[in-house]
Image (cartoon, rainbow, N blue to C red; front, side, top):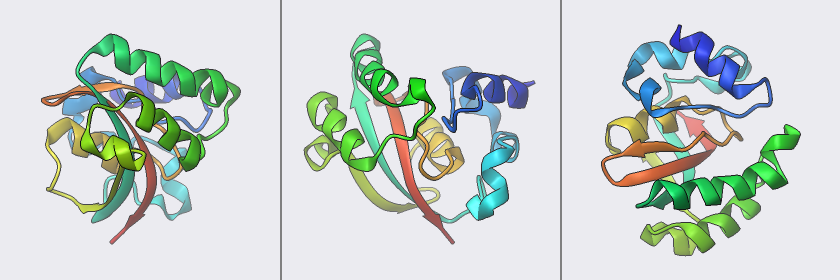
Length: 148
């Protein structure tokens, strides 16, 4: 059910969709991503992730930022280049990392809180998550790498 919903939201365009209702999916969510896990992506099982993110307090602002990526890249089925993601992060993110294009660098499993960690470790490399809510506000993530 959650697996099917996520695949449907992704529309086969390489975009990782993660709604706030899927955040509590636990380990099952990482195994249900299908296509991304085949190429050694290790969805849900890797130890470290390299990611960028955009954080906004208000949902309307995160949706505006995400729409910029949709209009330029995601709606065409393209992956968002890190440099383009960085421009959006610099413009919209309310996190100090926004000044660095949203770059969080490499971080281990267990460092980030609940929903953020769930989405970061289950987004395929090169893909951008859908906006989601955490205790800090609203985010979306670009996964740039994973390793054990």
